[in-house]
Length: 138
Image: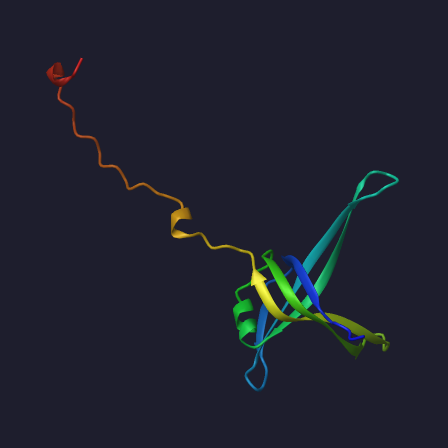
């Protein structure tokens, strides 16, 4: 049976996207997102929450678009899980996991023209009123 390495996450950026370029001038963006899961404990009835942090790497033109993402933005990331081994400061071999994104979509909307805050034009000063009450309708 074939296997599938697919991940889809929706979460908030923990830090703004960092854009770099390789020696071959290929764009690479890195950022992290947090996803949270909430549930009610069956025995105590208290609400529990667990937050997971995911490191995301995006390549090419999509990376350049991700450079606009800022800390706190809500995004949807589609891609695959990638792992790489490294040696830690303690000399032990470790494994790091990251999401190799093929698609990133931001849910941050920019206000449309009709949604922009309306600021009325300044009013001209009122003309000096005559002391003559004859023009009043009552």
